[in-house]
Structure formats: C-alpha cells, structure tokens
Amino acid sequence: MKRYIDLAKIKALRKQKGLTQEDMAQALGYETAIGYHYLETGKRRITAERLADIAAILGVTVDELYADEPTSVVANPAINQ
Image (cartoon, rainbow, N blue to C red; front, side, top):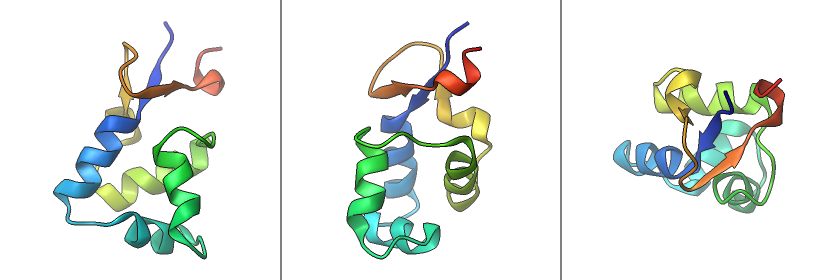
C-alpha cells in the first residue's frame, strides 16, 4: 500500500504546538526558515531521517505523520517499496 507524508498534518501540529516555521528550521539546523518552508510545502523531499526529527519535535510518532490517501501530501517512495 502506498503511504503519503501528510504535510497538512505536519503544519497543523506545528501550529498547535505554537511553533513557527522559523522555530522548526532552527530545531532542524537550517540557517533560515526557507529550508523548512520547502519541506512543509512539498517543494523539497523529506527524508526518513528528517521526518523522524520533525516527529520528535512535534511529539508524535513518524507513523502519525503519514496518510493512506493523498490530501496535502507528498508520496514517499522510500516506504512504497
């Protein structure tokens, strides 16, 4: 079964935690918020390692950041094999 990274959920969880894109960028080691913005908007592929980091910051499991149906998501070819 194909699984999708749920970018809308990541954004919603980030906002629920009161975190900005800049906060996330700093926590992930980016120099500017644009690096994180590209991940959250699907302009840059999220690696499994980076997704684990995002999940840890948001206080959820990696599995919770996936959806079975596409919404505002990016397909993750690494787990579709």
